[in-house]
Image 1: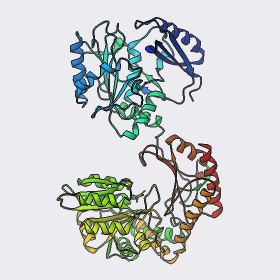
Image 2: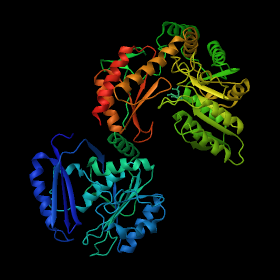
Image 3: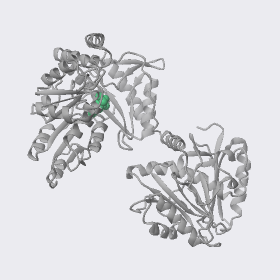
Image 4: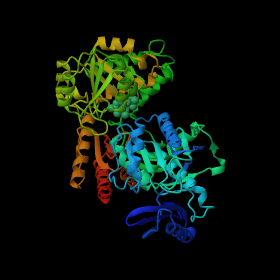
Length: 640
Ligand code: PMP
């Protein structure tokens, strides 16, 4: 809430037709005079005498500060010249079908708001087409200090509006033709070329005009774009005065750092800002952040092995014996006995011929996918796969086909429809990292086999959690292996790194072709020794696996008893909330009560599918989980 500031909005109409509108964000002391000035302005407008004037005063929410777009004035003599220039500017900004866009100005005159168009298909995206989308809740920062609201300053108001619009998610350009019969100016605005004022775009006395916002992005994002335009309070700083702005056709460009600063401000405004917090305690079921003790319900250290004395002793001993860093890539000098020992142990544990370790799980995915498929090949990927798989698919250069989540019929259909291609790879999370559900592995393998496709699963969240002794999905289903069994050392194994298990042929291939394996320094011996020791603990104490799963089932039951729906097939218990801001507020309230439960938002999950993601550890007690469930249920029902 912006202390002491108020948004004053004026709208005037005649027989339901909009004729004038303006708004200011001002300190409370200025509200009475601004209300009077805006009312006076409504009563004298060249579009007619209003029969209805509405002046609304409200407290804005959080205010985002944006730097005004740079301005250039283009002097044109005729409407035809002005429109040709507008078309040129749009074309330069990568917009096509300009004649069709310009023709749509016929329809904007009667609209109160702007037209929101898909920049490529020209589809209308506003929920209410007669009204359009109104960019409101904004002012120039320095108008607080100076400025009377009595006279319309077309120029400054338009820059404020254009600046806000160009910071709305997905907006790529705006074109505006003044709808004031006495004011013949218009503009084209984009982030790249700034605000390009065009002095003459229509005949004097012509009352037609309006605004078109061009949008490029996913459809699910449109509501957020409209929310930003219509509700987000924005204060625009450094609006240049008319005499300061550049005259001519030079293209003004915001500086590269200004672009970053502005985009970051928009991310923060959408509730999607991110920062690191320092956990001031050893990895485990409790931590301390900013001096506050917290129960950790978000750790991937599922079996509490990261702080296990056998694991940390192995890491310390290996660092002492082999050095803190490996000093080289695996194929030069970076392979030491702990690397070789761990690979043999991983292969034994997973029941494969061989294994290969990577510095991280992310690198294992990226490097493996890129080694198996490339240009001319096809990779099929579940729509909920982890980002490292998505990046691996993109980087590989293969054609990527995304199939519906865990929908084996969809996968089968897509494979059956493939024409001739060199190779095909199907890749899936074993346990899905944001939903906690499990791949239907037997059908997956059968389909891949029938279509002669490489099969690859990512067991990051399955190893140590799924299967009677934590060996993962093959153990759980009692079925054969996929071609590639990828996993991480960074979760249930309490260390860091990634691995791939498979045949000797596969591992030899990766050693020769996997770029993230070849061109990166080998992980240090201590991480390898720690994972090796953790594997030994896991083999000796399979009851840890049973405990983590019992804990997850117990939490789901407790939540259900309290009216919160959740389900899991692993240690990950997602609680769907939907709205991003609400999820963040719930996480904040839980944290204030001592529970660390992260809100997972776009882009990690789809927009509007925000959730709390609880991760259960074997070390949680029933009492911990009961208290957490009660707190979650309390805040969950508070939001409905
Ligand atoms: N795959 C999945 C499913 C994951 O959840 C993660 C990590 N969050 C990774 C791969 C990447 O592993 P790492 O953190 O070791 O890079």
